[in-house]
Length: 295
Image 1: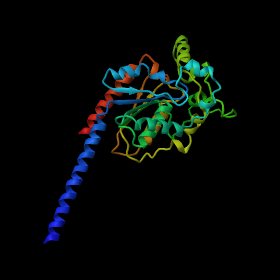
Image 2: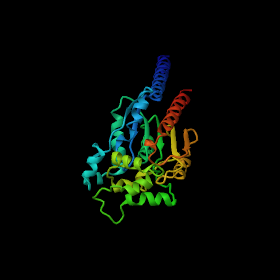
Image 3: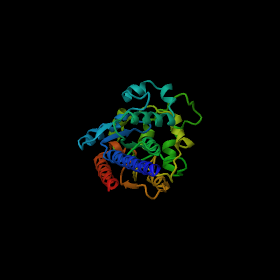
Image 4: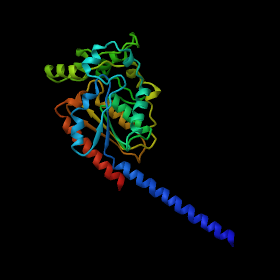
């Protein structure tokens, strides 16, 4: 008799603990789904002040935003260019960057919304694979391993950054001519010069190559937080078709994966006059998906 009572008591305790655990987990998930922290991740070749207009715009909508510079890049663009060739920047690897942003995320008060541009878009995807974001937005993203393109514009715009037949111990500094084609095509030349002076910095050739290695591999069948791909119709270095191919790779049916192509956007999308339209689309998408997850 006593053994039966003891067994029944243990069942009640186990059920109560399990219910409490599930309720707590659900509450934690709900809290993460209501996050108001945004982590902006910069791409290759440019400084983190690319987000200078985006940060106050998102903050005016109630978000807390950070856009940390990559290692060895926390300085004005002109100063970083003056230090070229820069062996510290030249040493940066993709794995190092992903670990760097993971460390930043783990020090935040809540799991963030991650928004990355170009190489930052790839890093966004890799961080979501690690379960570190409540949702992610990959803007004109460098694709994950296994997504290839043979478009001439991408090869022409990007091959110099790979640095073949040059020293990997020296960082690569994009020329103004390449900048015109790879980033600011279609813009008035005065604006191209202004943007080059304000944003262009030396880059690691290692990072430019690492996206083609297993370091950039993603398990497309794995469940993931909501992920939005944004592409531009006039982007030369990361063509829209490249982003669409990356988007189509994701196969987990119960995970949210969306795609949007904007007309007239080049790779300098963050600084084009149309940037607010893109930001509004992202804000609306974030709001809708936070609601979807809570239903």
